[in-house]
Image (cartoon, rainbow, N blue to C red):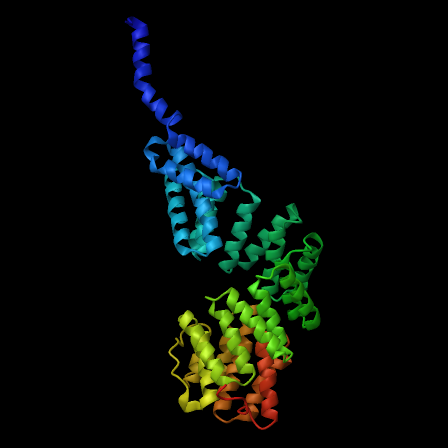
Length: 437
């Protein structure tokens, strides 16, 4: 039928046609294209189905399109895992991202996505490594730099994180996340006035931002402007009724004002919003302790300990509540490690292995800022409890008064407990609480 050059041309067409059909006409290619379109239009369920269908025929896709389908599905699974708080979905997202990186190791987008997943999983060193690769492959953008600042914060490289936030805000002064996170970091470093400058600007640029409003409330607490702080927290809850931290902070302030019923309602709401978080449950235990209901407090701390056995604080509080409610001989054994930098020395204190002076020295060796201030307040409080157990009431009162003398040293509820304890000591000792709840 065909001879010479024409025959050879048709032979090449016949030979190459299957390859062209595979990559240009196979339904898997169409699924990827339509999946990208659905993703751009916000039709997430449809996009997920299309990407998954395409990947079932991955052999018919070029590597670039396989990576695109895996990357798209990774983004969708990552978003779904955040909404549902689902660790299995997050694991699936990581697997997709790993495969995308293998297929296209020169694409920054896959390293950036994997860095974010690893950050959520608390794998900060690996997140830092992936973020660094993404920034080298480029092009750099504000989101990558913001990711890096967050990673540096968690790696305690505070100076580098602050420098990066400064750089971001020089280019975009109204970049909300950068300003909010810089304010939070400054607040944690005890630089409250500088934090308030950022938060005041956010109040102008983002007046209905519940998280920024709640953080202003936290800053006002640090400045001991309690009435204003309560007003800000009321506004924050009005803007975001699902903000568990805002309820926790407002409950703490109400407890410090002896508004125990209202505080209990706030703590109960916070626990309902974060039922698996023992730190929220522990605050309810602190409220019972504040009211002298030591039996109830011990029960709540036991629940918190069961939720997170590795948490070193719940056993300490349970130990103190049990001893206050039932006497020193009834206190449960403390099994935590004395070797931990903190709060290991507190375990050593109750075991008779560390002196009060040794506990304070250990707290003073911690990094300067909120970490050290909180540790010092905890040291003074638990030393007071240890003195009480030994019947040395004047020494216990002296240690408690150190908390009250330093307005920046302690959490609000701990200060309230210290104040109530000194009142009890002034009216006949610290054992006149409702011991058994």
